[in-house]
Image 1 (spheres, rainbow, N blue to C red):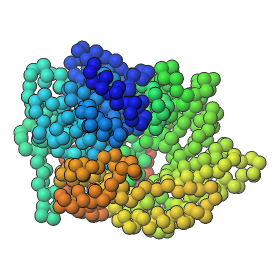
Image 2 (cartoon, one colour; image 1 turned 90 degrees about the vertical axis):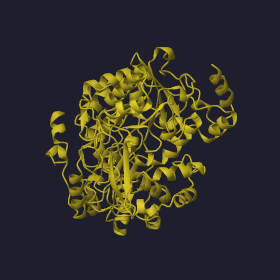
Image 3 (cartoon, helix red, strand yellow; image 1 turned 90 degrees about the horizontal axis):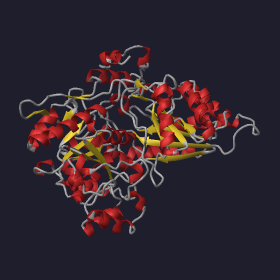
Image 4 (cartoon, helix red, strand yellow; image 1 turned 30 degrees about the horizontal axis):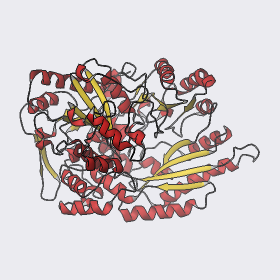
Length: 613
């Protein structure tokens, strides 16, 4: 087709042309005319990032399994390609058919990270679709968005027609059915949106109004027409074993971030870390059976040729059958030289057997997340990890032949002191001590302890959603202090996040509708790929906030009172606000809450948890 030839003429002139050519093994090739509903799945970042996203793989397979629908992929063109497309008047296109995105019925964005929001506007602009929902006419695609950031959709309310809140396996099917029925009936755009808002978990921002107090806080938020739900309840897949999961995954032509088979062993987490949004949003825990996972592993290994299987979840070490699964996967795939990787391991469990199985084929680095440097602060955040857990796990790893360990930590957590910051260096020193305690001839070579510190960002639907983020000056001082302390630890290296990036993330994480104007202003001033350091322009964001009469500190560095109306309060995420506040009070007392697998803690999902047993 004509557009395809024009795209071919561009790709030889840009870096990494494999981002744009499509045609990979296992990519769908469905006839356009046979599909009643056409879905363009848009990931607002580059190909190698988006192709690593498990949610896209699941929904891509789910939609294309329907006879009446098709799904094609779209990724944000890197700046060289985007500029060339504008110059040559080439619209944003899908990889599978090279069709213009604006020809699809649904253009769906996944919201994984707040700093990808300008890329959404960039992609809409390149597609020739009006940026604001209110400017779209009959015949324009439905702009849909989902993912974890959709749990506070308000900063994007002006640009997205409808949000899908929660698990997407079931709601996506219902949305496709609604669009198909609306098309067949010849309904208007508004009638389709009314259909959609009747689906549990779907939020249509145009059907709600927000009012603000003189001091900038939210005064009211309510539907502006009858028949629209006051509360939007998240969708949840109850039986993960019965949920669809791809048996084929697209094999990219270039290396991607997670270039391996991904097996989602479970969804949700029972630990209750108080800073962790995903741990609250994806409750309750639902597991896949060992037999189902073995079957999927067989099919995926055969259909992709990958030589590594990664067990994926929020906390893989908590999967109840981890030892059995690790052993059986290793037995099944060792002859084929397919290795097993175990990300997201906890430090307080007995992982010896699983580590032994994982290192039989090949070793990589192990990743652990103590988060905080002292027991006091780990109790505040309800991490549930003790100093002896850290040293024991490091000892087991080193004696098992591992020499590279990554430690994920966080700076700026509520109640943190400089003693807590110094404690991170002491943790690294204790890990190094376990390595050097092994006789030289018996320990593995090349000790590497990589300490990575992110900056705390208060997130919606967590016990810390009311807390302030540290100022940039405070975070910079803590980073400098920790860097100096880690110089004294042999084998340790230090990596950190720019405080300016974390400040902007905090603004959008807890933002309200007024940030849509800031987002549009920053985009018009040239902001895009804000999550990439070479393109992040904090000065331009500061100018955009000032131009809109808004203050970053109001969003990032302000403590919220319990009675303040929060912009996301109309969403029912399952975990109640009452429980989150109770956890906040416990945090301030340094009181821990046990894992709910040992007994219900009353978070609000009790009935659902019983139903999932």
